Image 1 (cartoon, one colour):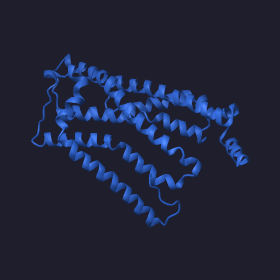
Image 2: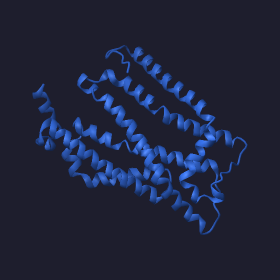
Image 3: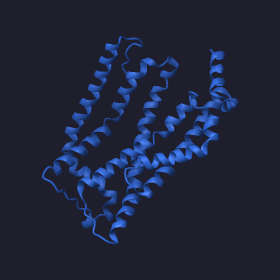
Image 4: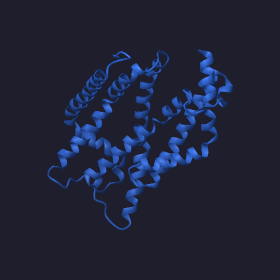
Length: 263
């Protein structure tokens, strides 16, 4: 990863930011153009988990003349962002790398790998588990009194938003892990205030899910709770191995004092 010097004039920083943004935008646009040709197949892949719940055997309908082109472009852009996800993360971290200490820069490689893995894991989990449960429940609310109309844009928008929502939500363990490892939030605070944190995660799950389905909200809530507890477990192991078991009870001031004496 090419990294600029730690100290640069403001204009040089802005030039560096523009260069990295240009790389990201060009990669996404080029990938979008390439993927556009395959969008009919990709759309079928997207709706495959919910096909059994859709009317007319999974047939989609477009209601405007430009609807097909707009939908294909959105799907191409969606998959382009997914494909370029490693490049986006790489370039973003490359811009902030000069601000990190050498001891912190060693975490960049594992962080990129973890970010990409968790994002794709969240999307796969959504595709295999969430889509069926969500659309099954939502369409069942309609079948008792009306016939559902499979508007292509509505269905694809909902699927892509769910996929992105779960991909982003599954980054939670990495955020929690670094908050604890760098003692931005003491471990004992995370552990003792679990009731308030659980409520906060429930509210966040309701906000992040793009539909009003309680099924989606509680499935996301259950997933992030598991991820939260897993991140606490991993962070505990690292803290004990690095600073001893006493570090689990340190406040932020006690941690800073420990680092000062260590240096």
